[in-house]
Amino acid sequence: MKRIVFLQPVGIVERDILIKLKKDLEWVLKGYINKVKISLEPLELKHSEYDAFRRQYDASKILKRIKQLQRKENGFRILGIIEEDMYVTHLNFVFGIAQSPRGIFITLPQACLISTTRLRESFYRRPKNESLFELRILKEAIHELGHTFGLDHCREECVMRFSNCLSDTDLKPAKFCESCIEILNLNFSYLRRD
Ligand SMILES: [Zn+2]
Ligand SMILES: [Zn+2]
Picture 1 (tube, rainbow, N blue to C red):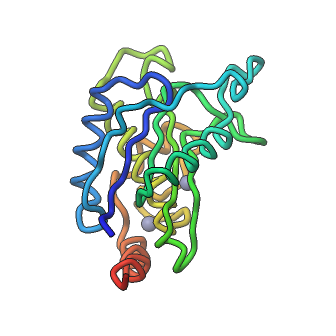
Picture 2: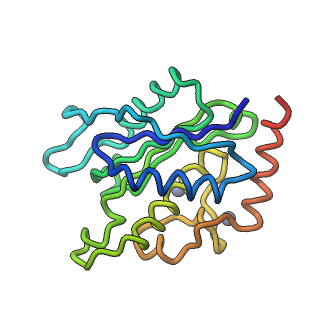
């Protein structure tokens, strides 16, 4: 099976962001995936998934729709990307969410989702910084894809460190640590068997 990651815009997402992320992910995840493809049809935003009081979208509901899309595509991984702010129950906001398969289940298609809203300097009323913005998107994308590859949160100098706030994202590197790479290689050995 070809390991293709589909980049799925949810609502309107700047095309340049998707193109940059595609290139960066193909570089960082080479050896694990074959290709990143950008879906041309955006998944529409739904009013029923919007909480007008919180002014945020329900990440779990969107992830569910992304999973349904994936069944049609039969892809390896699908990464949703949304420019709106999102939440899950009990958390004020989330940068992203993902399915976290265990063991052999990593061979099944998995989905994840990231939001770009809080990765922009302008969200914090600071001057625009495009390269910093792109680097943050890359880190969050690798992090959520890492979960879909069976990785948990990690305490090392590693992209799998949990980000509670934006400074946590800025402090972590855009790559996996040695021990996460070991787990990744073990998990991917299930895929190499098919
Ligand atoms: Zn995480
Ligand atoms: Zn790690």
